[in-house]
Length: 511
Image 1: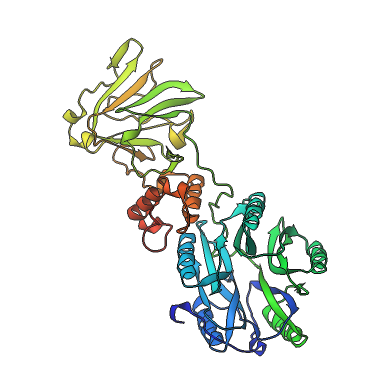
Image 2: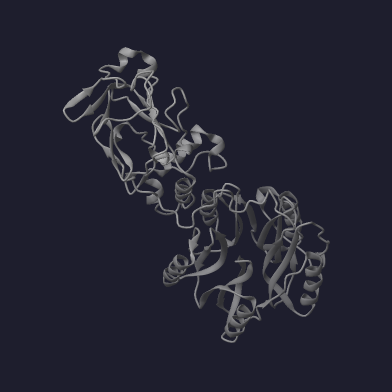
């Protein structure tokens, strides 16, 4: 299918095929009175789905709903097709950034989203499937939000003249997270949050009697029980919700309903696994935090001007105190409201172009009694320590705690120094000897160990919070949080370790 364009289509008799698989895939759909062609394609891999789409488009049908699940380790795609004309594009899987870029491009071409599907990769990153048809007006696709935040956002967008058209619901860390497509519209627009089937049907009957129809339904599993979320708009229609059926039985049921004058308006897949599928993307081993919050600077760390890094061994809440000159930190570290998001996965430092090192106690500004060493000029010790860097580590950063030993090799302590124990009220002062000095982070203080990459600087929780800012980037609007230094961080990640770049191709968007 050239450029993923679907062009035309056929009849419901094309429903056929029995789906035999260890994983049980069920179809359920919303039905209302209607006419015209109405086809649900069998589950196929992506390339076969696109080929099938080309054929159906050539027969005068248009894709309006796409669904996807992993069945027996392979991602399958199925679609709902109705009679129509004009452009019809399918694309995906797309990263959030690529989707927003595609939305901007398609809007310039007079196209709007009519459906989107969302799933997670094993690393927790989101991927989208998208269907476009001709349209006009404003459209906004929100990132995942808690129910309370989503309802609040929906109220505001509705007052601004937009209406919810499509919703996706995920369960992450025990919370329901909502993503929604809002477009210019009018009339009644309601969202019902998770209800049992019986309560959902009761609410449906109540709405239908008031001239409100179901336009989108999502099933979500909560504590082992199925719940249904609905998007409702002004309009007529029975909005019948069929029971889940395997594809063969769903085809038979669909033929019966079509003969009675009903047409599918929306569909949903239900997957029951017979065993744990290692290929299931799920939320992954480090699921995205549903409420991403970037951490503040730890209480034991302060950023200073000047050129001296100080380690104060006077404990505060069991932690040594670090004063770190910010001028020597990497300039690509992310920022939150203008403040550095300090790394939280390090346990040591590598300090390049240090000038001098001094141990101090009250009354003595240069302690040099064994095992402590006072070094006036690190450069005199050779390029290995001056240009390669001096290194130390211990109960700092991710390793705070009384059981973590200090690692203070030469030139901090004598080579045969016993277990390190600071003198009362002792501080370590490390002064940089050049403006070209650098502070780099390590997982420990062992000499000659590699420094951490940009991706390794942060714990999964912090990294995922940063990732949420990247994935929320919208090329059509302001991106204050992302552009306040986060763009430089992800650019560094992608240049330094391309295999860990969250963007499939190229570099992250720049501001």
